[in-house]
Amino acid sequence: MRHLFILAMLLLPMTVFGEVAAKNKLDEISYHYAALPNLYELEKVKKEVLSDKITRQYVMGSQSMLVKWTLAKGALVPLHMHPNEQITWITQGSVKVTSQGKIFIVKAGNIFIIPPYVPHEFLALEDTIDIDYFTPVREDWLNNSASYLQNI
Image (cartoon, rainbow, N blue to C red; front, side, top):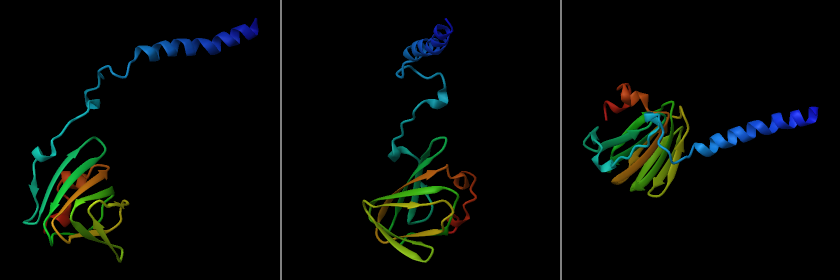
């Protein structure tokens, strides 16, 4: 009898939770508005003109940010670092990245990953489109404390 009771105690939660899981379909609308996906048309996102050679557009979620940089040949993003991991994808053109005494030539189709707090500088070798992914969100951009961008 004791073994039957133990078996029932083990099987009962699986039966109950199995029914609950079946009732909670993944295609139902979430009741958490913040959990809704967002769709952006990047070409309609505001273009920030940072200099005569650099424009920036970005969208963000709660934990990450996607940025499109348009860099004219000769554009320089000065040496800086930040607490964010940065994944850079050059989709057009090429850049020279200088970091810790090393030079990297990043061309269209290349992906370049910069860990948090690693100093780096970008120089556009030709007209370039650079797509960057940052995590977490660049708070220094949101509160205008990114001093390296103020004199470009």
